[in-house]
Length: 282
Length: 308
Ligand SMILES: Nc1ncnc2c1ncn2[C@@H]1O[C@H](COP(=O)(O)OP(=O)(O)OP(=O)(O)O)[C@@H](O)[C@H]1O
Ligand SMILES: [Mg+2]
Image 1 (cartoon, each protein chain N blue to C red):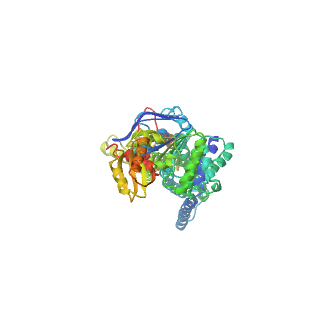
Image 2 (image 1 turned 60 degrees about the vertical axis):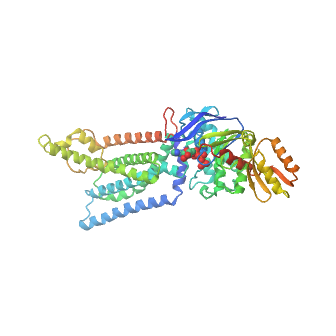
Image 3 (image 1 turned 45 degrees about the horizontal axis):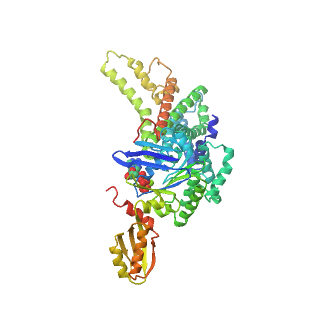
C-alpha cells in the first residue's frame, strides 16, 4: 500500500491526468448526465402519481442501471488508452528500459485509470440521497451495489488495459475493449436466454415448467451476466424465476470476475515484456 | 563494455542484422554509421533489452541482454531515435519521474536533477512544461533523462537528428563532456563528419552487415585505401587534368574549372608522388589535400554497391 504513494508511475499519471481540462469535463459531464436524467425521471414520476415515500424502488433501480450504463461506457475507454497511449506517444520504449517491471507498469496504469472511475462513482453518491428519499432500499443493498460496481470497474479496467497492451493503436484497442465488454454485459445474457429456450424447445418433456433454468450450467452462465446479477441484487427479477441458486449470484459473480481481472492483468504484463528468455518473439 | 557475438536479427523474412561482432572498450565512443534501414536502430534495441535477437549474444557491462535484462538496464541509458515526452509535466517532474523509475531515493533527486539540467544547459527551463520545449531542448532533456541513474554505457540513436547546426554543435559539446566523464558511448548517425570528431572508433554498417570497423582514420584510409582529395590550380589546368586522369591512383575525377575533386586510392607516399608529378609538369598547384567533406564521400564510396 505504501508503494502507491512512492510509485513514480502513479504519481506521474495522477499529475498528467488531473492537470488536463479533459478530466474536469468528464467529471462534470458525468454528473450532469446522471443528475439530469435522475431529476427528469423523478419529475415524470411525480406527474403520474403522488410521491409515496417508503416503497418506491423504481427510482433506485433506475439510478443503478443508469450508473452502470455510464460505467460500461467510461471504464473500458479510459483504460484502453493507457499502454497504447504510451506507445503512440513513443514513450513506452524508454519506460521499458527503466527498472519498472512490466507488471508494475500494468498495475499502476490500471490503478490510476480506476482511481478516476471511482472518483466518478463517489462524486455521484450524493445523487443517491434523492433516491433514499423515496426509500425502498436498505443500506446493505446500496453497499452491495457499490461492491458490484467496484468489481465491474476493476474488470472493465483490466479488459481495457489488456486490449491496450495487446493492440498497438488506441482507437482499435478502445473498440475491441467495447466489443468484449459488450459480450460480457449483453452477450452472456443473450446466450443464457437463448440456450435455455433452446433446451426447452428441444426437450419439452424433460424440462417442464421452466425447470430448465435450474440447470447448474445455465445458472453459471446467468450468474456471469452482470445485468442479471445486478437485478438480482436489487431484488428485481428479470425473466424466468428460479427457486434456488447453487450459489449467491453476486458472490459467484465477484469471485469469477475478480479472478478474470487478475488473469487479464497478468497476461497484459506478460505481453508487455519485450524480451522473454527462452521464447523467441518476432 | 559492449560486446556482441554473431548477433543476428530477422523480422520475418527480412534479415535486418547479420552476424554482428562488436567489442567496445570502457570509455570509448563508438560511432555507428550507415544508410537508412541498415540495422543501426535494431542493434541498439537489442542492446537496450527491447528486442530479442534471433541469434547470437550481446553483453553490456558483462551482463547478457537476454538473461539479465535488469542489470543491463541499470547500467545503460538508451535514447531512441524518436521519443515523446509526457504532457502536463514540468522538466523537473519529468526527470523526477525517471529518477523514481530507477529507484533513486527522493532525497537525492533534487540536486541530481539540477545537475543534469545544468549539464544539458536547460537550467532556465526547469519549470517549463516539457511539451512546450523545442525539438532541440527535448533532445537535450532526453539526454539528461538517459543520465539520471548515472549509467556507464550510453546508447544514443541519432541524437542530432532534426537539430539545426547550432543545436548539433551544442549536442556535440555535451557529448564531449560525457566522454570526459569516461562514459562508454554508442552513437549512431548517417552523417560521418558529425561522428568523426567525437568518436574513437566507427563502424560502418550496411544492409545488416558490418563492413568496416576501426579507428576513424583506419576506416577511411588504411582499411580501404580510399580518400577524397581536392586539387586547386591557378594555371595549367589542362595538364593537371591529363595527369590526374592517367594516374593509376585516381579512381574518379570531378572537374569544376581548375578545381578538382578526386577519389584517391593509395597511400600517403602515393599522394606525394602525385603532387611531385603535377609540379614537375609545371602545374600551378595552390591546394592539394584531403577534401573537407572527405568522410562523407568515403562513406559513400565504401557503401557503394555493397549487398547488391
Ligand atoms: N518492427 C519491425 N518489423 C519489421 N521490420 C523491421 C522492423 N524494424 C525494422 N525493420 C527493418 O529492419 C531493417 C533495419 O532497420 P533499422 O531501424 O535498424 O535501420 P536503421 O539503420 O536504424 O535506419 P535509419 O537510419 O533509417 O534509422 C530495415 O530494413 C527495416 O525495414
Ligand atoms: Mg534508426
